[in-house]
Amino acid sequence: MFNALVVEKDDAGKTSAGVQQIGLDQLPEGDVTVAVEYSTVNYKDGLCIGPGGGLVRNYPHVPGVDLAGTVEASDDARYKPGDKVVLTGWRVGEAHWGGYAQKARVKADWLVPLPDGLDTRQAMAVGTAGFTAMLAVMALEDHGIKDGPVLVTGAAGGVGSVATAILAKLGHEVAAVTGRPETADYLKDLGATQIVAREELNETTKRPLEGETWGGCVDAVGGAMLARLLGQIKYGGSVAAVGLAGGAALPATVIPFLLRGVNLLGIDSVMQPYDNRVRAWGRIARDLPMDKLEAMMQPATLADLPGLGRDILQGQVKGRVVVDVNA
Image (spheres, rainbow, N blue to C red):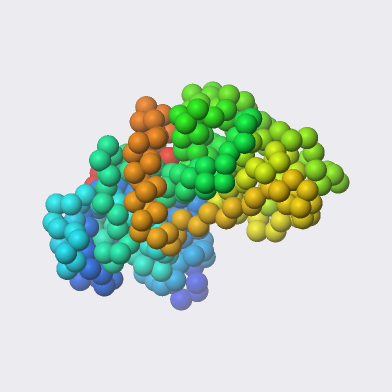
C-alpha cells in the first residue's frame, strides 16, 4: 500500500480530495511502474482538485499532470528498473491517474529519460509549466526574436517565472508583466529588467496598432491582454501563446498580422513528439540557471494539495510548487 491524493465524487456530484492508501492493483494499465518522488502544482491540477472536478474524466481519480521518479518495473526495453524519468502531458492527471501518488503506472511512450544536469526535484521545479516555457522560448527562437525587450505575461506564475529566467540567461532583456506589485523584486531576481503593471495591458484601446515595443512575447494569459499586446510587437516579431487564464476569446483584428507580419504561435505541451520533448528537457538542463530555479521553489506535501489547488486558481501561487509525495 502507498499514499495518494484521491479525488472522489458523490452521488450528488460533489467532489472531495484527500490522502488515502491505495494498492498497485488499483493503478491503471501501463508499461512502466514509476516510484514517484516529486510532482508539482499546475493550473490544471487546481481545476482537477477543485469543486466539480474540472478536467477529470473518471472517478476516483489521482491528479497531478506531471511526475519525476525512478522506474520500478518495466515491460518496455527502453526503460529498466533504476532509470530516472520525467513525464509531462499526455492527459496524465486528467484522463489517466497522475503524479500525486507514491506510485504511477504509465505508458512508456509518455516518458522521457531525465537529462544529465537535473535531479528529480529540480525536474519537477521545472515541471509542465517550465517545460511549456522552454517550448515557447524555442518557438520564438525558431521564428527569430527581434531586438528589444521580450515581454512575458503572467510572469510571477509557473510558466512566466521559468520563461523569465531562461530568456534572461540567454541574454535577452525581459519585461515582466504582473498584477502583483509585491512580486517585482522576485521577478528582478529572476532576471527581469523591466516590470510592467498588468493594468497597462488590460486597458482597452481602439487602435489596432501601437508603437513597436516588444521584440517578442511569451504570453501565459491570453484574452484581452493578448489582443492588446499584438499591436505592440515589432515588425516580424512573434508571440508564443501558452495559456488561457484570461479567456479563450481573442478580441483582436487581423491588422497586426497583415501590416506588421506578427506571428501568433500556439504552444501545446500535451502531445509533443518524443524528439522535441527530449530536446526541450536538454535545453532546460543547459539553459535554465539552477540558482534561479531554487529561488522559484516552494515545498509542499500531498496533504497540502487541496488548499494549493484553490490558491493556484485564485492566482495566489508564486513560482513553482514542488510536491514531495513521500514527505
